[in-house]
Image 1 (cartoon, rainbow, N blue to C red):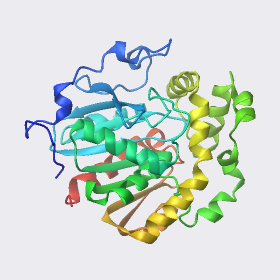
Image 2: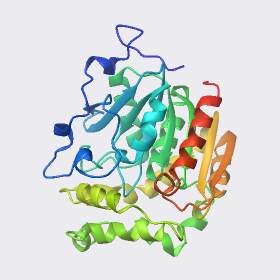
Image 3: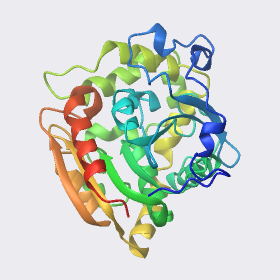
Amino acid sequence: MPQFTSARAATPRWHRWARPLALSALLVAGLPCQAESSVPAFPASFAVRDIDGGGAALHVRVGGQGREAVVLLHGFGETGDMWAPIAAPLAERFTVIVPDLRGMGLSARPESGYDKKTQARQLAAVLDGLGVERVALVTHDIGNMVGYAFAAQYPGRVTRFAIIDAPLPGIEPWTEIARRHAVWHWSFWGPDAERLVADRERIYLDRFWNEFTAPGNRYPEHWRAHYAALYRQPGAMHAAFEQFKAFDQDAIDNRAFAAQARLTVPVLAVGGGRSYGSTMATVMRNVADDVREEVIPGSGHWVMEERPAELIAAVRRFLEASPAR
């Protein structure tokens, strides 16, 4: 079970600064807050805080009442807001921690440090600030890469790991996946890319929401508008591109992690049936010993938006059935 290293052993440190997830915390430079749009909201009991993670702050939502903690990590095209639909059911049993990744959403945007090894260390510092020692990980997209780097560097701090629909740089079949035309955006970054996308963020993001959604599904308009506003913030697309620019270094780091040690905690490898599917289990069996496979039929890459009930049920089964290590 996670250990909360606060002065009061029964109360995690985050309770001492907890305040409601108020509208004022989300009103940033004209951005729509959750209550002003139709995107799902986190429970009112959740707290929000910007926490320093070694020189750059992460915007973090925390709630729930469990002694076990779960960290939810998002990916590109979204922010920690994507996890609102699962926050309430998980909070019934777990303490739920939901950061915006480095440079994304409402987190700080430093010029460097977008390799996932560095971001995992930043996450560790944030958890230290919360007084949380051990966590389960639930991750999607680029969040997978940060989650793996965290589990590899801090194996004693991870109890279990649910990883959703995106590969890990350097872990096969990465080489084959990287040759696919659909992932040209992995090499689309730099000053000229930023100029091309400036004031066209919605158009650029629509490409991902359209092409990576399964036929017959549609990524919801309310989420598109919400995230487009967040990615229009100054420096937001630069930071997003830096996430992809770091993939070459991430591949080097991940190969080194895998050569050093395998993950021994239970892993749930989730793939959309019309996206990475069973490939997720193939990836994770290259780095982990205890891998369970879950393919969500009829879903593309955006599993939380395309098949929320099925994904939430799968994650809850895994977290609630697997004994913490």
